[in-house]
Length: 414
Image 1 (cartoon, rainbow, N blue to C red):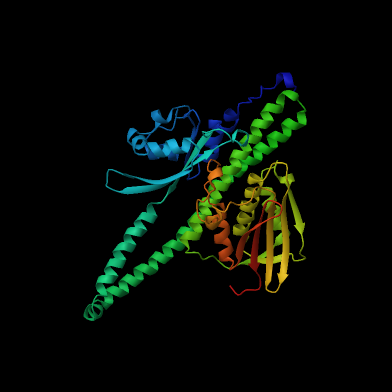
Image 2: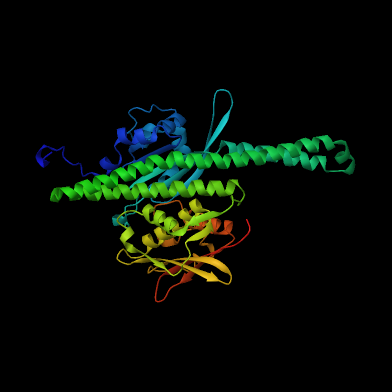
């Protein structure tokens, strides 16, 4: 097909990223409730699950102002939170509703602002992603645990009561065992949910990369704006994928109480190649892999370690100057026997104010509060390293920059 007979390329970034028919096909069949609106407060995308929660029709919602789509009571209650997200500040809160039968459901709502890298000086976000996670089971579990602990305390108040209520204590222990089994099932469901959400996102990312390659092969000067817009859309997709992965990983780790299944024999070069594939295509050339180890097979939890290394690389790429390389160094030690992974950048380093809370959930330096993301990256890194009985360190690099160093013991009995 010649260029003159082709459909004109739409170079508007919002139009490319938020094509309702395509995205609703990607997300409509998944269990996630999500919406995205631009800096003009108009909805670009809302899944049917999101519309169902707020009791609004799913047709014709795109293009509506938030004040038109969302219930007035919700807007009034969370007005300050929505305004803070519009100013680029990540927000999270829980909301509930009760149906006609008196059954209450809870949702954990995360508002992740997005600011395009080229507009870092803006005071407002280019858009806000709202992700809703069902946390009803968590509230029910808390209520059940409160009742159980109260009952246990009452039954243990005197020796005579403990004797008389021995049968009741046995029942309570049975209930606690049941709760443990439910938590394990919850972890399995999180893993399933992770697959169901990530698959359409990965499909969309692959389609965008294929479209960018096709446009580049045309060698048309007028196609440059469209390529840049598609590249921006891919960055947004990678940001959403990272936020979802970190949120689900945090939920999995917390649900199992900081425990995970046994490590498995993992081919290290394959794992590193998968991590590099996870990085946005235009950022991959900045990463230089240095192998200072002969080891090929290691004992790891491959999925969690893949997410961990990706978080460290994305942090280095985001905070270091765009024209500087990021080193991924693989090494080993014999005493003790351990795998060493280092991510080395030439960024500004870590401020003394941030260093004591660097690995806490949601921690950010004052100068980076407007960056996109949920602030879970380094929290996930520390949690995963602890699962491996290892250690993570943030070391200064001379003359400037940071070395994020992971020590992962090998040869341990699981």
